[in-house]
Image (cartoon, rainbow, N blue to C red; front, side, top):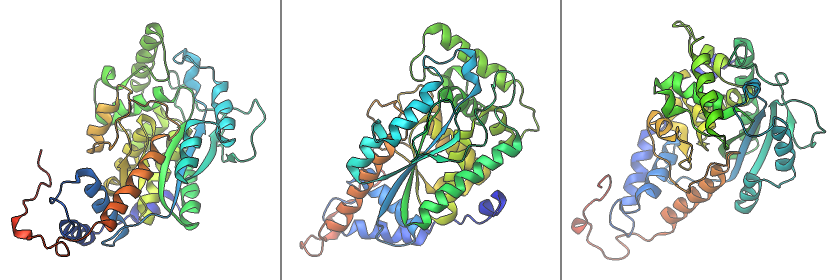
Length: 357
């Protein structure tokens, strides 16, 4: 199927299932609403799955890897070769997200969406490269419109395969030196927030490089036409990694599978997917509050708050396995608690705390 067919096939979540899940929580032995976000996330998951008591089985984080031409502008402290080196290390199970995924029993899929091919590649990396590296957004579009659509459809296909193999929740991760620049540009373009609020220090740059980064984003956004739609904007400012993640969010919404945001880069991709179809928002969960400065703008635009705040800024999708574990814990609490009736508690004496500060 083509991109538009997936977008048109996305259905709203099941409100009746959400209501049933909330009522079920209200019968458990606790002050109503006192488990806060643990209740909220299971109620949302119930709506996605269309059943009162949600569950999780196979969990997978998809990591999209791509090199970004904007690195030529000296906006990163890391050499471009790090993208490939880290992808290989991840495939060997040696990076943060790999260790976290292994610990929580989640799978990891590493996808080459457009890395340079200058070193030998681990065979576990899935080769879906659109081409070797995106354009330098300081002087040209990161992708053509056709490449952006192809990258989105590739992300859909990768996620679709996982879902058809029994995956019940997807995480989103990335590897790509320079991609905090492309994602910051996208975030600023979509939200109209100030560049100073959207552009941060990424994996670590000095003040001179930060000023260059601001200049590059300002210059790139200056090329946007008032007639640009969201695909044009993605093609102009983004990279193959971000476009691939957009496809993962769309596939999740189409198949009724929750998809988890890690940090800034995958969050920017989520915003693009939501711009393409507002209903995608209901299938998105946020994992943790990134320490990247732009995170405040991101979560306001997503209209949701992350569940964890661990001062993390690793990227890779590292927040996703942590969220998988948290969500499974919330489901375990929901299904493991006794009822008010069984414990002879008068429900009329309980006051709901749901939504109260």
